[in-house]
Image (cartoon, rainbow, N blue to C red; front, top):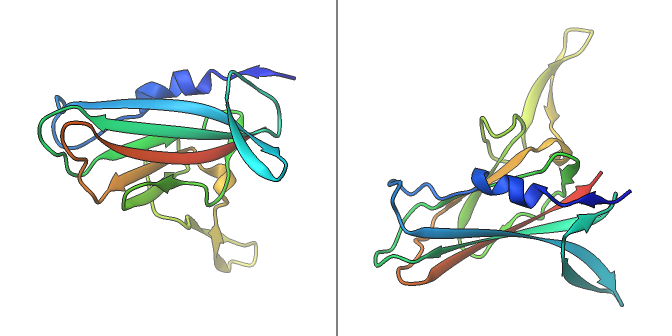
Amino acid sequence: MRRLLLAAVLALPLLGPSAGHADEPIQGAMEAFVVQLEDERETLLAAKEVEPNQLVEYQLTYTNVGESKINGLTVVGPVPEGTTYVSDTANADVDAALQVSIDGGKTFEPEPVIRLETRESGEVVEKVVPPEQYTHLKWKAQDAITADGGTQFYTYRVRVK
């Protein structure tokens, strides 16, 4: 069963910088690629349709088109419905603190996500929430995005259910 990849288009409004002022000159783009393995090498093909069990890589690029550097860029990427986040695939080309959400992007916390669970015996134990339950990823850049064309690049992968 093929599915149109509408997630990238629908997700764009959820992405964006948060650097202190609403009028800062940041341009963002999000692209989706199907990851294919050919001769033991990965290749990325523009994703238009996806099939169950395919691996999709999202690439988010932010460019500063202004004349001043911007500190503290915050980038949020959704894990689209019908997919699951693939553990340890979130990357940034700058020093950036990663946090994740398991509640639709309402709250974020560092990995691993831990919850307390009470067993029938009354014993309280820590339970690690698996990455498959993540709904969003968020990076807070530690490095400034330089003026006049400076870029920052973020990626992560999901698997289609």
